[in-house]
Length: 150
Image 1 (cartoon, helix red, strand yellow):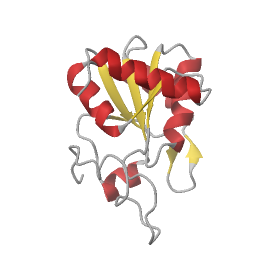
Image 2 (image 1 turned 90 degrees about the vertical axis):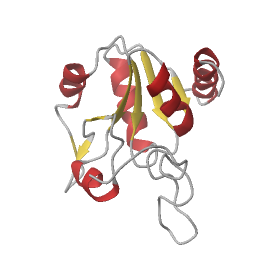
Image 3 (image 1 turned 180 degrees about the vertical axis):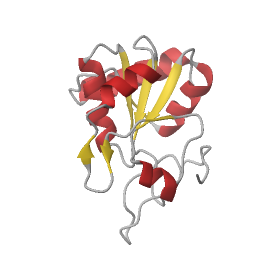
């Protein structure tokens, strides 16, 4: 695995190429490595509690819903819950099912002063396969990274 600095530089380049307002884009493997080796790094999983119960969890992640189920309503307390759980000076890596909601969470965190904000590409379950199912083509689970059923 490359150095922490090299991983972060590559992530920053990906975000700049995509014209994103936050620090960077990480692969699941890079995010896992950073969570294990970077001081004060946190994974924030923004999937709903229902998704965590049904699909599985990353044990080391902080879980804060971006949207609630059922109804997929925005969590009005997301920022206050984030601030209560993760220091704004921390390296924060957001994850969801496939990378969309975590992108929105990363934008929101950057907007309120979090300075090292990253989105985890592919999310927990990744893209749909040929049969339209997630969790078989890309993402945290497919990469063989640690997770468990809740």
